[in-house]
Image 1: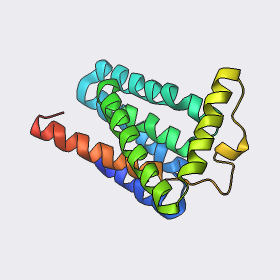
Image 2 (image 1 turned 180 degrees about the vertical axis):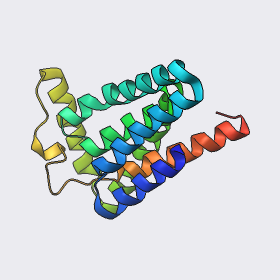
Image 3 (image 1 turned 90 degrees about the horizontal axis):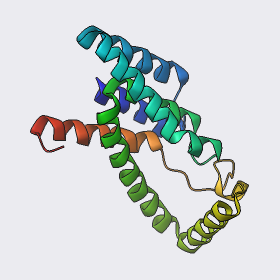
Image 4 (image 1 turned 135 degrees about the vertical axis):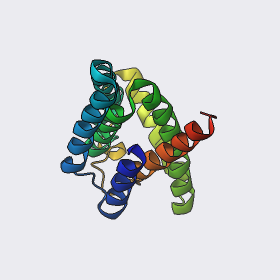
Length: 168
């Protein structure tokens, strides 16, 4: 179920660069219902903890406009489907895959030096306790953006396959 859910989100994100509320909310509800049906109150608790963890960990990135709200809600829904333990594995794999995708896009578009300057701006903003500015946020129409939902789906598929083979 999580792989199918993440794949639908990836296709939607790839096509429209949006992950709709109907998908994330239905994934959240399905995660809670399925885990409750399978494990009773323990399943409900694990599902809610997974959703809260996914939302809490990524909220700062939404607030500084470096991650879209649909991506954020997608991780909350996956948390409800997977529970907190498996969500952390998927989140780490997602971050690694998104980094590889972003680096490939940066190289392909020839924007390495601009990216290095932007990272410098973000680090300076961190130390000065200010937001880094619109030039390094999703609000910048010239910013390079990757479909985070694709990285999420790949991570879910890889982690699910690893669980099936006993390697993750």
